[in-house]
Length: 317
Image (cartoon, rainbow, N blue to C red; front, side, top):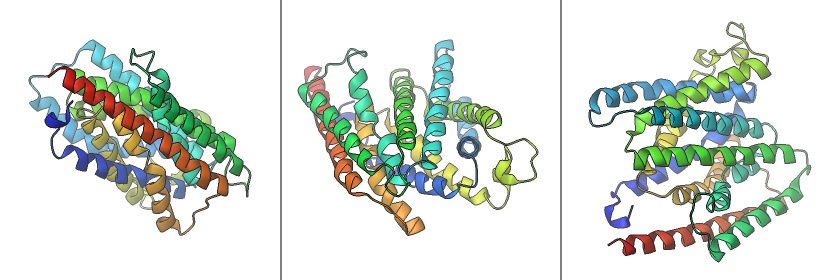
C-alpha cells in the first residue's frame, strides 16, 4: 500500500504494538517457576479469551467476508507457526540472556531476505549486504557464550527458530489480511487459540504437568490461580491484544519487511524494560559490539525495501 493510502493511525498502532510486545520477554522470563511450553500456552489461553468477544462481533457483522476452505487451511498452518514461535522463544528465555533471546528472535528480516527469491521477489546488493551484516553481527555476539553461564548457543538457536517460524505466521497474516481482506479478529482468534492448544499438548507431552495438579505452576489452567492471574491478564491485554493483534492489523497497510524491522528494536526496548523490571541487565562486550551491527543490517534491508515499494507505487500510478 502506498503512503498516500495508508491511514494516519497506522504508525501509532505499530509503535504501541512495539512497546507492548517488547515488554513480554521480561515478564515471561520472570515467570521461570513455570515450564516454558506451559508458560507459552498460558499466554495464548489468556489472549484467546480476550479476543473471543471481538471475534464473535466480527463474525456476526462481517456479511461481506466469507471464510473459504483455503482460508481455514492457512489459519491452521499459521497457528502451528505461532505455536512453534512462542514455544521456542519462551524456552530460549530460560536458556540464554534476555537481550540475546530478543536479538535472535527478532532476526526475521534476514530470513525474509533469504526467502525472497523463493517468493519471486528481487534481491538487491543492499539486501545482501544488510543480511550479511545481520549474520556477521550475530556471530560476533557468540563471543559472550558461557561468559558467566548466562548466554548459551542452544538458547540463542532456540530464539532463532522462533524468528524462522514467525516469518511464516507473518506472511500468512499479510496474505489473509491484505489480499483476502480477512477481518483482523476473525484471523487472530482462531490462530491464537490453535497455538494455545498446540502448546498445551506440547506441555503435556514434554513437561511434568497435568490437568489436575494441585500446584498451579504445573497445572494446565494454573494461570487462573491468584498468584499468576494478573501476570497472564497483562500478557494477554498488553503484548497479546495491543501487541500481536496490533501487528496483524498494520500488516494490512505495511509490507512484512517494514513491520519486521520496526519490531527489530524490541531487543533495545525489551532490554530496557527488563532492566527497569528486575534492575538487572547483563550485556557482554561482544553483545554490545555485535547487537548494533545486527540492527544496522536490518535497517539497510528496510531502506532498500522501502525504495522498492516507492518505485512500485510510482510505476502503477
